[in-house]
Image (cartoon, rainbow, N blue to C red; front, side):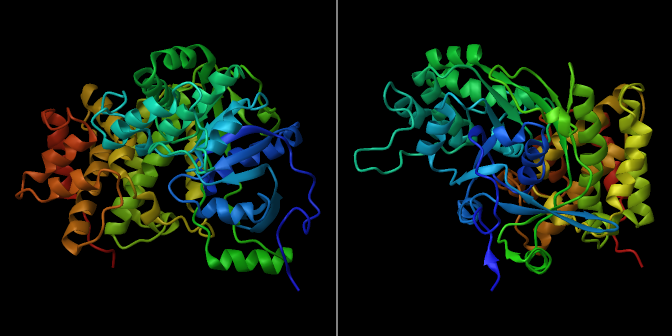
Length: 478
C-alpha cells in the first residue's frame, strides 16, 4: 500500500522552529522562497509558517502532510524530484489569531509576501487606495481590532476574531500584536512582480497602520524594515498527471506537488533587523540598489509573458512555448525587448545573456506555462510592464511600437473576451466591463485610463496604441 506523505512516513527530520511567516501560500512561494530557505546553509534553523490568501484549500491539504510536498524540477532532459520540508505550518489566511500569535513571537524575524499586485490596493499614485471598499472596511475593523488588548485575540467562545479583507490589513492586525508583546523589529519581504515592491508594501501596510492608529504607524515606521526583491522562477499550475507522476516515481501520495523550471533567481535589497537565513549560500544575491534588477525582470521576462499572453491567445496559442515558435509573436518579443533594453543600464545587468537565457527557458515545452494563467490581472500587470517602456520610448523621440503593441493586444483580447461572454479574470473587472460597454471608439481611452490615468490625455501614447491596434494581426496562423 502506498503511504500518504507526512513527516512520519517520509522519515523526515523534525520540523524547524518557525522564524519566517509567509502570506500568500501558493506554488510560487513553495518553488522559490521555501526552496531558497531549505537550500540555505542554515536552513534547518528556519521554519516557515505559511498562510493562504482567499481560500483555505492549499493550507488544508498541506497541513495534512505536515507541510511536506514534492518539488518537480522539469528540465528539457527530464524531471528531478525533491522532498521539501521548509514549510512547517500551513494555515487558513482567515485565521488572524494564528497569524498574530506567530508574527508576535520573539523568534519570528521575517514576514514574506506573495500576494499579487492587485492585493496591495494601491492607487495609480502608489499610495493606499482609500476609495477601495476593502480598504475602508479594513479601516473600520482595524480601529476596533488593534485597540489595546484586542489585537488578534479570539473571543470568549474561542471563535476566530474577524479577519481583515486585505493582506495588508491582516498583517497590520498581526503587527499590532507584535508591538503589544514587545517582540522587537521585524523585516517584511514582498516577493511580488511589481516595480519597487518594498515601497508598495510600505505604502499598503504602513499607510493602513497610520490611518488606523497613528501610534501603531509610528511603531511600524521605527520597527519594520521593507526589503525590496526581484524574484524569478516559472511555476505552472500542477495537474492531476503531476500528482500521479509523483506517486509513481516517489512511492508516496502527495496531494500538493509543485512543478517548476530548473532556473531560479532572487535579488534582495534591505535590512533584516532580526536576522535572516543564509540565502546567499543558496544563490540569492544581495545588492545596495535594486530598481534596475526589478525593471530587467519586469520588462524582459514579465513583459514578454504578457505580450504572449494576449497576442498569443489571439493567435490561437495556449502556452508560452507554443507562442514562442510563432514567428509573429517571436518578432514582437524581440521588438519590445529592444525597446526595454534601451531604457536599462548597459552595464551590470548582463542583458544579452539574460535575453538568451529567457529564450531558452521559454522554449522548454515540458513546462506547460499556460497563457490564460499569465493573462489574469492584466490591468495591474501592464501598468508595470508596458506603460513605463512606452513612456520612456516616446520621451526619447522613438515610436514605442513594441510596448504599444503589448497594450493593444491586451485591448483586443478584452474585446474578444467581452464579445464571447467570457469572464474577465482581473481585479478591475467591473471597471473593465464598464469601459468595454462604451460605444465604439470610446472604449480605448477608458481602458487606457485604467492602466494609467494620464495615458488617455497623452496624445502620442494613445495614438501609438491605436495604431498598434489597427496593425495587430489577431488571426490564427495557418
